[in-house]
Length: 297
Image 1 (cartoon, rainbow, N blue to C red):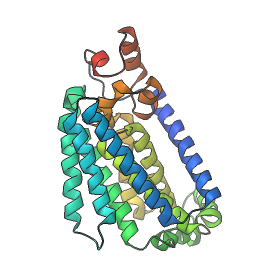
Image 2 (cartoon, rainbow, N blue to C red):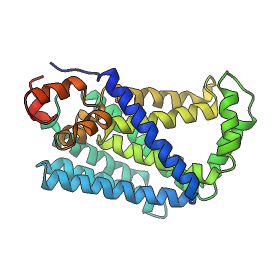
Image 3 (cartoon, rainbow, N blue to C red):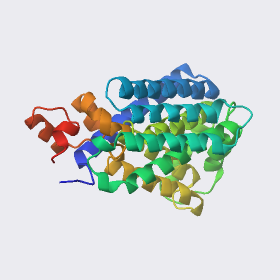
Image 4 (tube, helix red, strand yellow):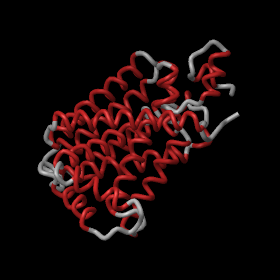
């Protein structure tokens, strides 16, 4: 029987694990204190090479050449968006990104259990593209180096009149952390949009990616004001990311659908959103939590 949503336990595991990783990255970045542009460059190469490796694994080991090729096409799209200077037409990298996502969808169809929920794939890919587009726009709109537009957002959060009970707490954080370190936080913000957007777009570690984007949406909501009209788009993004999290959207025509049988159970449950009941079914049948152990559930 198909199931749309994953368990509360799995969702909480994803949230806790993602918050821990985010905290570690923020602490390390605060200690090392690299330039914001250096941070973004690092994640551009890390993300690209990691997804490139996953694509090659899908082609050479998992027997999913179309999905693997799609992941590689998405990497090329990302590099075009950031490294092709001067600014190319957005049409170029956008078409490449959507083409890669379509290839992944067709390449992972055989491993997707909840085939009737394909509209979730449309939502996942569209919103992930929008996150990546935000990241490259921030890169090209003078966020980096120096903080640029992000500094304006942070300063605006400090100077505006509080509108609800959480504002004083966040405004204190903005004045004590964001404004003095605007360049670093601009780099971290753009890098998070890129990293989590790319992962969600191809459906790799989908629950991890969706939780990371929830963090970013919440930060934008708080920096603008939780009850003000200006944060309405961020609230829409928050809702879309939450939908991806509670439905384990990476398992629906995403890379996770094909990779879950190759990763440890902890990774499948915590970062991909494979439910505990699915893991139990797989264990009872003596198979990994992939298509072979789950197809009949």
